Structures are given as C-alpha cells and as structure tokens.
Length: 251
Length: 258
Image 1 (cartoon, rainbow over the protein chains, first blue to last red):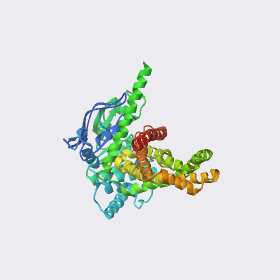
Image 2: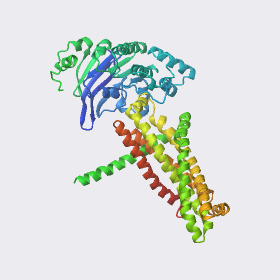
Image 3: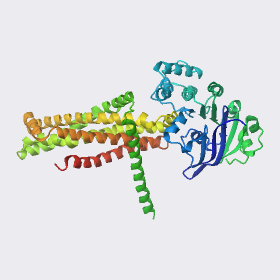
Image 4: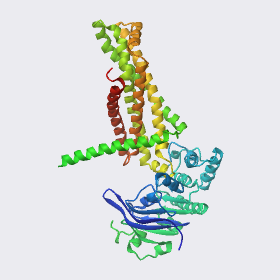
C-alpha cells in the first residue's frame, strides 16, 4: 500500500442549492502525481481548495499529513498552507508586482532569509521554469505560457511538500503544453513531494499522471493508475476519454 | 407575505453587512496593536490614496468656503454684524465643512479605488493566491490602506480647513468689504485649537469608515466585472451614508450642543 499524503473523507460541498460533492472520498498518494479529471463544474478546482483549506466542506473530513484540517484554527491552517504550493488556473500573479517580487513574496513574508538569499532563490527558481532573467518584467508583459510558468515558480519557490495545479495547460499551444507537463514532472522530482493536477487535457494527463481520479456528479467514479483508467470499463470514463456525445454523461 | 419576506431578508442583510464590516475592522486592529504594519506599502498607499487627493480636496473646499462666505457675508453686513463673518466661516469650517468635505471627496475617489482594486483581485484569484501562500489579505492589503487613510485624511482636512477659510476671507473682502483684519479678529474670538482638534478626530473616524467599507466591499466581490462595479458603487454610497450618520453622532459627543 502506498503512503497517503491527503485524504478527503465523505466530503460534501454545496454552493447554494447546487450540490458539488456528496460523500466524496479520495486518497492522494504521497510522492506521486495524481490527476483529477471530470466535466466542467464537476468540483475539480473545489477539490484543490479543500486540500489547502481555502474551502471548508459542509461535512466530512479533509486529512492532510495526518491532520484533519477542517478542525484547525486559522493559524494552524496557515502553517499547512505554507507547506503546499498552489498554481492557479490564470496564475493569479499580483499585477502590481514584478515577476521577481511575486516569487519573492512568500520568502520575504514567511521566512527569515536575507535579501541576497531571496534574490538567489528567485533567480534559481525562475531558471528552473525556463524564465531566467525575467525578474523585472511585470505579469502583463508576459505571454500566457510564461505567466503559467511564473505561477509555477511562485508555487514552488518555498520548496513545498506538495503542489496543487489548477488547469495548468488550459488554453495553451501544444508545444507549451508539453513543456509545462514536463515541468510538473521535473518539479515534483526536484521537490521529492506530491502533486495534484486538475486538468481536461487528456494527452498531458496520460504523460504525467501516476494516478487518475474521475469526478462525476459529486463523486469519484473511477480511480487508478493511468493504465487502469485507460482500460476502465466504466461507460462514464470511456465516454469522457473518447470525447463522445453518446453515453451516460448528459450533454 | 412577500413584502414581509423581503423586509426580513433586507434586515438580515444589513446586520450581516454590519457584522462583516466590524469583523474586518477587528481583524485589521489585530495587526495594528501590536504593530505588524508593512511600512513601505503603507507609505505607498498614503501617496496613492492620500497625497494624490489633494487637488480635488483643495478645489472643493476652496469653492465651498467661498460660496459659504458669499451667502453669509452680504447678509451679515446688511444686518450690521459683518464683524462676525470670520468667526462664522471658521467655526463651521473647522467643526463641520472641513472634515465632511474632505471625507466625502476621499470616499468618492479613494473608497471607490480600494473597492475596485480589491474586487479585481478577488475575481482574478489574487486574494486566494495570498491566502494560499499563508498570507493574510487583511495584513497585506487592508491594514496599509487603513493606516494610510487614518494618517492622510486628517492632513487633507487641515488643507481643506485652511483653503476654505482663505477662500471665505477673500470673498468676504471682495463682495462685502470686510477687511482681512476684521475677518481674522472674528476668527480668533470664535474658534480655538480645540475646534480644529475635534474636527481632526472626526476625520480619523471618517478615514476608518472609508478604508474598512471600501475594503469590505472589495473583498466581498462576487462575479466578474459587473461584481466589481457593484462593489465600487456600494463602497461609495455606504461610506458617504455612514460618514453623515457618524458626523451627527460625533458632533453630539464632541460638542455636546456647545
């Protein structure tokens, strides 16, 4: 049995009258890349927000590193969040700060590193995502792919134990998509940690995933290695993988 | 029944809003006492939100002082009490017009800017990004704006006081032929430093209202661009209403009818 980094246990989430998750249970394996797939609005991004405590479930437990984070005080939750990197769908870089300042922010605010050490860490991290020497650019001056990579850099600069990626390749060309997919794999190895990726991009998922979970109508309908998911006989999974209009998934 | 439902829902919304604003203020005070203020960002905000407001404060207070003097000076001279005009203008300016005018102008310009900026950060997930880095949006964003306005609005009020009185003296001199000496003499016998100080106390309270309501509206933004627009409008409307309400309460407390 592989070690488990995080576990969603019988989690239910509602947004007003809409039920997004109902008694959902999912294990995130330690030291692996778990990809979460599903239709738009299935609750994939909500899953990521549950894992770092940005969203509290209406019921159920969220266990991260052996602790139920739904019961933690804000201060303890902040410590958990600092051990988890989060790469947002649109990067969510602070547009009033340069790329360098964006990446330096968690180091400046959360550590006692000197200015020189921070500058070096930022330069090293930018280089590792292929953005060397772009410290002084503003986010508005970067292309879509560069913005995503800068978002990755900010998420990993503190060497977090786990990194959560929300739609890391959506809207990018196939070459940049491939570059970012490789980058997620490389960063996971470098950090020797865990990654959770939410994506629609099946080609990219099958390249990087160790495990895949499929969300449908508020529950996990399939979970396994890439091969197990590929061979799954679940008609929902097969319809999703084939992108077919015909099947149990209502259009 | 629908009318009762609506009244009930609206009442609940008002209490929920007030609770949210007070909670945000409490959270902000947590970072001010003991001080955990980001000094650089506070100075930056003091410049953006406060210093850049001086031209509009200057213009509005100058013309208000002038029109107030225009209306009162001619009448006063007709009734033979022209020697009271300086006192009337200074008394009203230091106690009411200066603090109110600068606060309303700052609420329109700066309260809207705070709500729009923070609202945009909500819809582009920048607030969630701060939280995901283990950083408090209140400490990073709200406190610098709150402290900056608490420092700058009193300074703008002093500017409004001075300009309004100077404008009033000039108009009194031109239209009612009241000498500057007489205007000054009247001022000296009517107002003292306490009047200025009490006006400044009001301006600090107004600054807190503008910053906290603007920040609360911004951070509560839902939806996209339309949500930001709604938050911005609400920030200005609610701030101005609260400024008028608090002005009455503060006048009652500080002056007690004197």
